[in-house]
Length: 544
Image (cartoon, rainbow, N blue to C red; front, side, top):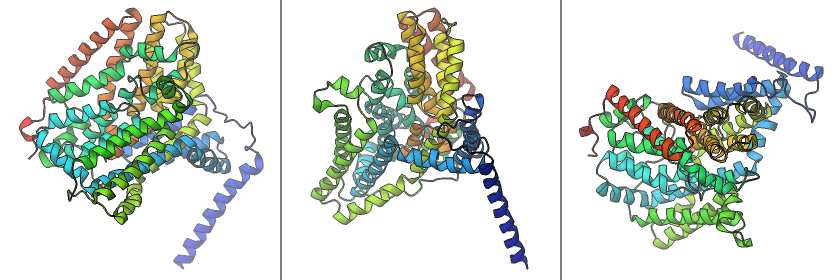
């Protein structure tokens, strides 16, 4: 009797859902080619990503938060027509994001890199490098600074940076009881911020491609001294490492790592066990170093190739016109082939062992692929709601008459837009043409461009739906929400100092004044935080 009642209830629910889907479809046809949401380019367009971000920070669960944000965005896009909303989630959302060639290229790069990491682990290269580094890096500070140094060296592309630095340095930071959250922060803080001040990078190429009427590369280089968020973020890593400053949720993670050997703090460990299959065997340090160097060189060559280097383009033009996603896929695929042949010739792995790493590498990247797919889908639906147009309209209406405060306004708008949409490239792609079109003195134009880039980096750096944030937590094998929650206070500290710096820049347009004052202000803020919080005992931080 009970089973029949449950079956009847289920049938009624299904019937009610079918009716709810059918009636709006009969009432109006919302599938027209010129269809536009009723909330297009209004404040409502920003709510879906904000809902996802807030839910992720509250629930500590990223998948359901992103999916709820996608559903809410689809409902707004469809004007609450359930059938149109349901269809849009797939046609305009998941399928569209997975059909995008750029996104597919990044997914291919992810899987190949996961496979290479698996190969290097099984060959014993990671273990051998970890032992070599353990003998030379004898303190937590040394391990943190080594991670920072490697992150700065890999400046060509942020995706490549995130995954490579995390995977290479993770065994070393684990031995020195550095929490995965702290590793993820350093990886993330040396990804986009470094690329945004490197003239030869995929980011420099993207910036030069959206500035019309000027020499985009020259503007990018001249804007580097004013890119306060990127420069101060890198400086902050050195400050907090040397002074032993930890605050916010990061302090709890570091205390647990140092005092209890718990690198995760929270029960949720999505990557647990995936980095445990590491044995030295016949492996040597070169079994890690050579594949990584080959990967770097081939990825750079792949980007230059897509930029037309073989057609006679200069290196600068090739980087400016490159397809970073395709270049990384082409380069990493050749690097994977080289690595397999190299390990077979070295006789540290058999052919079957190499092939077994293909599915294992894919499985290791499944969490990142799921989060990226949902994040891209949410970003796509947010764009359908006209979020960029809404932010641009606000900016055009309010900023043009406040030229003195323009750098600070630009920084704030770019930060909010990048944080909400999870994309820095989309942010400066929209805002830079507006900034250039306002018309201002040359030095103020440079400062405003740098403020746009800095704000885009800040939002991208700490947004839970940013692809670089996701890849940083993947490379460090850290719970994604733990990474977001722990680095947010650090990023906000730098952003607040940067905002003050851009206010000063509006009155004193000189990098020789603005940058030193901002550095002193950052050091003062961090020193006050250290006095208020104290430091974790150094005696407990040494590796055993």
